[in-house]
Length: 64
Image 1: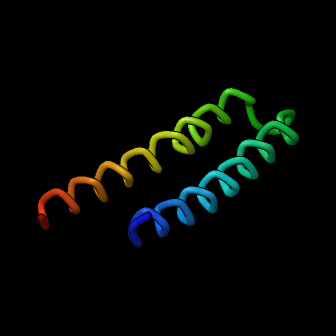
Image 2 (image 1 turned 180 degrees about the horizontal axis):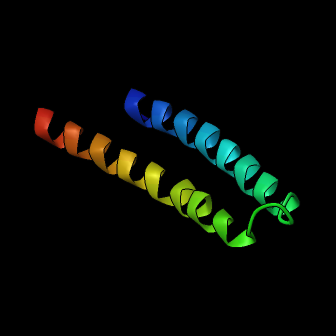
């Protein structure tokens, strides 16, 4: 596994944990905030790591 992939994996784990805490907080305190607001952080928890991986893959291809 290349260095950028290891760093991406570390970033992804941290990103997903923080996003899960954010979604959990929104759902737990749903009486003060609409539970539908938890969809945006859940969406970003999946999309941002995928985009970062794509950028890393593209960077590796351009450097070869």
